[in-house]
Image (cartoon, rainbow, N blue to C red; front, side, top):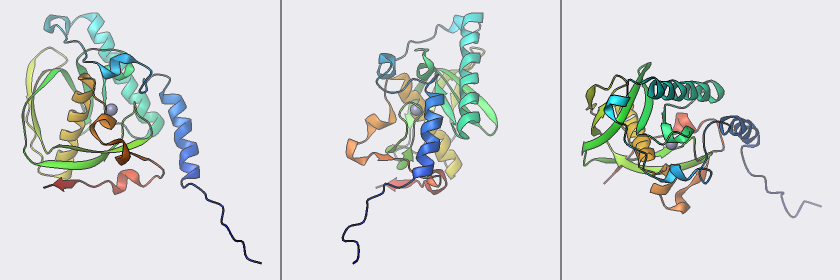
Length: 207
Ligand SMILES: [Zn+2]
């Protein structure tokens, strides 16, 4: 007699085992949604003359260490906002071509009309994928780690450029209390359940 019913099995058993193990480690220093009210609030502006102070530099060193730790643990993680590790100040960092860019008090002053959707994950909203629509590029005024006024105007002509402009918009959102999952309809959220997710992620142009 054939089996009248097949047992339902959710996918990605091994992947989930691994990623939940990672989550238990990263959530020891990265706040998750619902754990920290500041994640949903605007972070404080940094007084420019404080940037070179030992206190502020110590926070920056800590933030750098957190991103490095996250990368070592998971093999991913391109950027992080200070509020995610309990520092509710207008500070973010992200890697670009093996360099680390530090943005303090970043302000988007111009953005592309062209929009793209791309599946994003956030280390504060594990392990959800949110297909967020963002501008192809943005122009940003900010201060660097020495307090110097700088401008970000990397135009997105390649996938790499689109990615960099997206990461920076994602991190600036954090400084305004917005998490990637807030930008989509809850029904669009999916769970990351396999290792091929990053390799298969594609930009979709919005008409
Ligand atoms: Zn995030």
